[in-house]
Amino acid sequence: MACTWIYRWGWSTPQILMRLLDRKRPQLATELVKRGYLEKVDVPSGYHHEHHILLLTDRGVRVAEDAIDTSTFNNLFAPQLSEYTLHRSRRVPWQMLDHNAVCQHVLLDEIGSRPQLDSYLTDAECRRRNSYMPPFDGFAFGVADRAIEVELEHKSDIRLRAWMYQRVRYLSLNLEHILHIYTPRNSIMQAIHQYLHDKRRPWAYPVMRAPSGKLWENDRSQERYAIEEVRKRIKVLRLERDDTRISGRLRPPVVPEYADWL
Image (cartoon, rainbow, N blue to C red; front, side):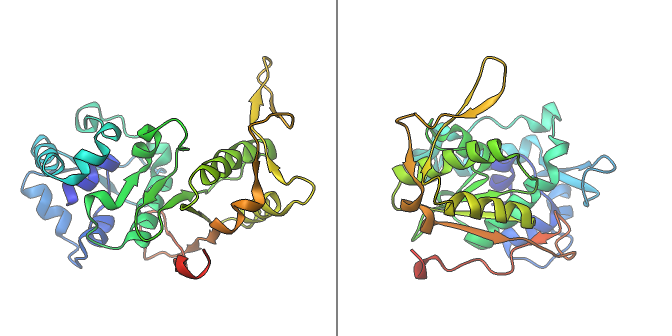
């Protein structure tokens, strides 16, 4: 399970793997390294609270691929998978490390420990799923299928509108799905709330890029979607500081029970 998680996310941390496997053994990652499944890679100074992250070794890759090949996940989501090469390329996206660590933690908050392979999608798998699915930070399948977003940095108004349009469009086309947006910033929560409740702008319009590179909202487009029809299926949740969560140091106070507000 640890190998398939890293295969799909690219990398992980000792603390995240303990949560994944529901084990309270600080030496768990060290044991997997000694057994030849994982490799520790030092994190450059200033990029992350962790001293190192975990990649797969060639042996770990084989274990993960064997597990995926014999699972129902492979039949359902094979197009979303790509070959694991991070252990050779070493092209770790260091600048996204804290963000991706928070995403892994939040996904586990949503789906719980020891998840089935077909109970979630990672960010990379969402990007490859199909043309109409936005590049969500994660996706959890269950009683209610829910997309997951983690927003740590503020967006300009026009970029927020472009970002929200994609998500309103997706929810309009997938009536049974919901969206959880996690953020530690009041400004982001307020901006999303304003977008969803602005009576002067009841429609979500696509944002276009002019030849000059400037972004503009095309309010004459027929590809518009009623915000009110999806508003109740969007939940914005605050991430709070938690120093016990070494990776990212953020957690939601409570993951919502979705059955009572659908």
